[in-house]
Image 1 (cartoon, rainbow, N blue to C red):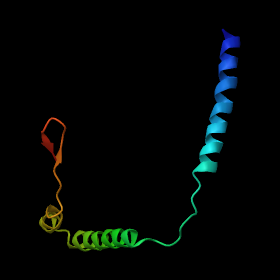
Image 2 (image 1 turned 180 degrees about the vertical axis):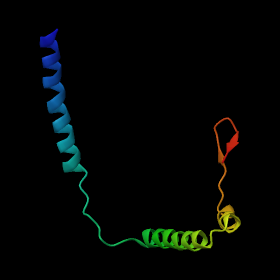
Image 3 (image 1 turned 135 degrees about the vertical axis):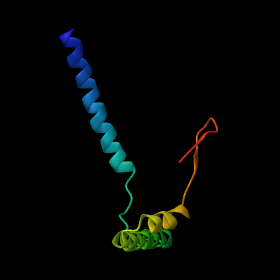
Image 4 (image 1 turned 90 degrees about the horizontal axis):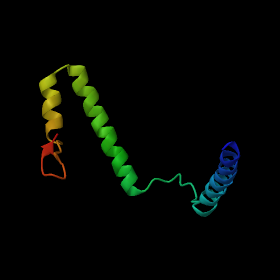
Length: 85
């Protein structure tokens, strides 16, 4: 039984190493330091929400927080048709 386990390990480890090496070799993409217009728009939106959250948190007003975030509320629908927030 122990011999069979050793053969199994000796087969799996090289397969993993070769697969990882092939993945790195064939899926190389040049790192891009330039953000696309979509990424810039996403980052600007995130920054806007962050600043909004900071302002409302400083106000310490739960109703203001609820009013700001209610406009962005999304209802997720499960596969069976039931909705959950």
